[in-house]
Structures are given as structure tokens and as C-alpha cells.
Image (cartoon, rainbow, N blue to C red):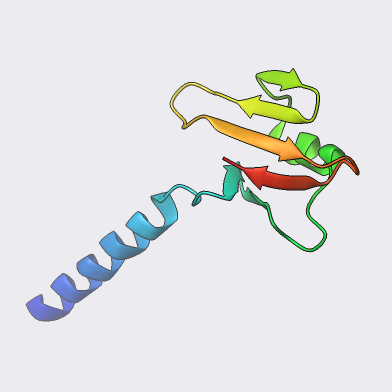
Length: 87
């Protein structure tokens, strides 16, 4: 019985760590959404705005999200308005 408790506790900790991990480079977590670059048909500016909100700064086709408590993300859009890269 005690061994089962430790197993369940271990599984809960691992699951918690997986959920708490930030999105990897090339992707960005926006609430419950994950925005990814390098997709064949990457999200457009409208979809990114809808899911992530207004960026901290817009420099043409480069958007910067620099929110307190989160890592800074730079999104680069192509001439067609589709997301090309997240840095």
C-alpha cells in the first residue's frame, strides 16, 4: 500500500513537471494554446493576435512578446503574414 502511494506521488510529480514546462523554442504557449512556427501553413497574424493578445512591440513583420514572468519571444512573419519563426 505504501509502495503504491509513492508510485502515484511520483507519477503526479512527473505529470506536473510536464504540464509546467514552457513551450520549446519554435513554439510559444499562450494560455491554453500553443503557437508553433515552421508549419506548412503556419498561423497568420490574426490567429496569433486572437490566441496570444497584443504583442509588447510590433516592428513590421517582427512581433515581440515580453511579458513579466515569462521568457521573451520574438515572432517573425513572412510577407504573406504567416508565422515563419519564433525565437
